[in-house]
Length: 122
Image (cartoon, rainbow, N blue to C red; front, side, top):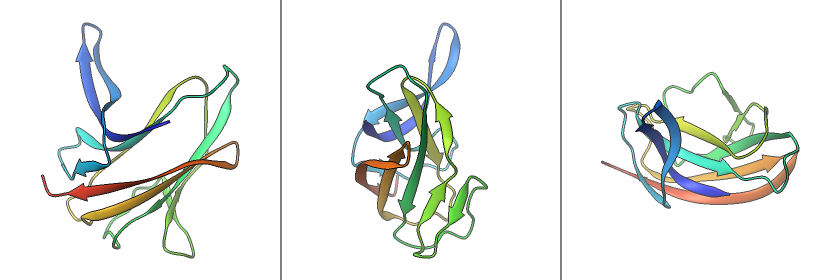
């Protein structure tokens, strides 16, 4: 599994979502082109379910519809089915806080990896 700055790349077939670089420091760009992301690289070709829990350094004013607030103040994504390597990314809003974001990734209900990413001003 890899974590870092997610965004859009382009090739002859057009734009596609990708992990632009692996990093534990990501600039908060609100252009809709990049954000925080992670790639799940499974050990087999079998389908799997994935969700993530995000701990932010402060409360954002707005939250996307794909995130559910948890009792401890963290946010959980809804489980998604996937097969093969898959990118999961989250764009920034202008009011998203700067600081350290914690991300826990669960595959088939099991915690498989945690990471901390520091979000800084661009």
